[in-house]
Image (cartoon, rainbow, N blue to C red):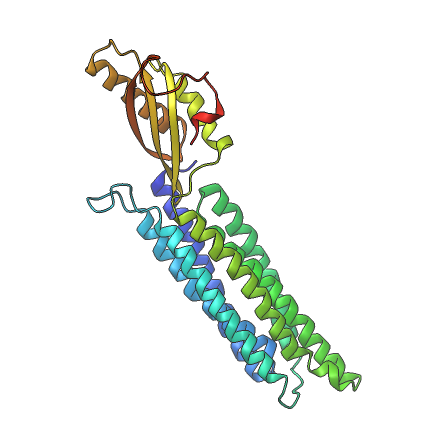
Length: 314
């Protein structure tokens, strides 16, 4: 796991690569789409232009997320990445609607045969976007960055969208060559297909981003590792409960432990500090730990549970 500063630098470099690539593709597809009279390519150009804005939102989110905790944000700014992911998703959804509307209306206009250059640009786009998808997706998972992962799936949506556009442009060219009028309309039909790909991807991204923003806790199998480490700390007689809240790329842990009721307050405080340092030292994604000390014994309101019991995680 990378240190926070190194993590931010790597993530921001990935965001900049996305911005430059999307800007290049938006300009290239816009010019060629206009010259080649391709509705599908122009729709794809608008999609790339929105990707530029989305990548900028990701970059801003990454920079805000790396800021240290302050008085107003004691848990840090990690959720800025989730907010950036939501912005990217909403932009993608709006673009999908715009692409679908303009392409659908073009079906009722006189058919225009696109130029062959539209095919070359779309092939180039598919190759470049697939490379960007794998690069950002793997990096996003390694850095646990929701914003980068969301942006990577935006690239994959572009691959599917450009593939649909390629089929449409190619079919239209073949229709003109073989004198099949209906095939010529495959270009705007492909634009509609592009919009459906984009809308589906945007919906999935929005759903996941909102889920992660609403104080999502780690699942039992992930949190059980934290419980096991707490149980190993000297002086901890029982783990009464543990919650690990995702806060962007890191988690905040709330844990309740039982200790010998006859020890001093100072000793109980030391045990709590050891629990905190244990989790933060052994798990790079744990950013802070809040420990509540309970007195151990059958007369106290916390149920006796064997160590490792999954019910401890709630």
